[in-house]
Image 1 (tube, rainbow, N blue to C red):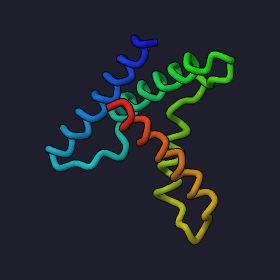
Image 2 (cartoon, rainbow, N blue to C red):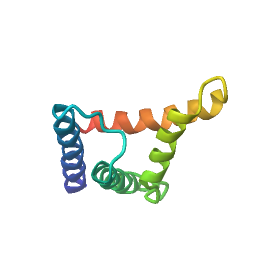
Image 3 (cartoon, helix red, strand yellow):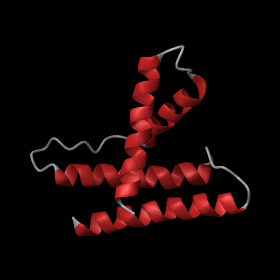
Image 4 (spheres, rainbow, N blue to C red):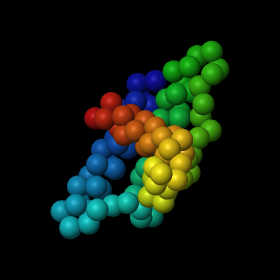
Length: 105
């Protein structure tokens, strides 16, 4: 399990380095093929950790970055006045992703 944690930490560092590099260029990264690939790799590693940690077979390892991307799109397109429930769900998904990143720093 340690090896998987180390890989997830390294994947998070790759994302952070990319974000910092882009920020130094004056860009705010929202979506790019490179950024999505890095985050997809990280999500896959988190899913793998989840399946290893849940020894009773309840760990999910079938999630992809598509859920996060849909949540981010929803936050950009759907206002609170349109649908509070949809926005709240999208915010929870985004916050969960951020929290796991912070945990692995």
